[in-house]
Image (cartoon, rainbow, N blue to C red; front, side, top):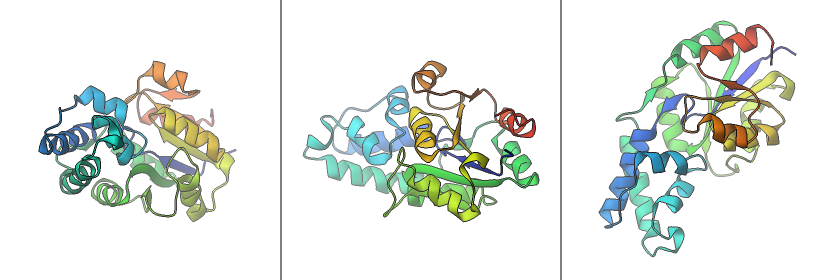
Length: 218
């Protein structure tokens, strides 16, 4: 069946947000005298939302008596500094334009906090009209709620929809939503991790997605 709708993860898929996330985590940790985390550690911590990120970054997680204060400091800092070093991956802007030119419906679904998703979407992808972040009333990925929310806007059928992401969470999300997952190799997880997570279709460069859709080889 022809693909009509493509839903993208945000961090590690459309945007390289890793440096800004690392800076925000370390700002909050330092403010409370806690050891900083390396960018490679943060790379492994992301994917399940910012609370889970901070549970992994703060010593002893939520058992730490300062956890909520550190988490609040992180959120406040990241709201202001979410775009200091963030940038689209090479080829992403061309891919977005090409898909829109072909009449493909586009959406963004992320476990990132809703305010940051909307900020970054408006800055980089104003032509993408549907963006869903971590918000009240929707279970975050890998629950399919946010994907279903995006699909409902376009009245998209599962067989006509792709979900594009860079992590095992995205593989599981697509499975739970009953849509095909395309896993990208330029993001926060390597090929081995993706294959272990059950990834079946992997691409190395953004425009390879366009080729898959045009040749209907998915």
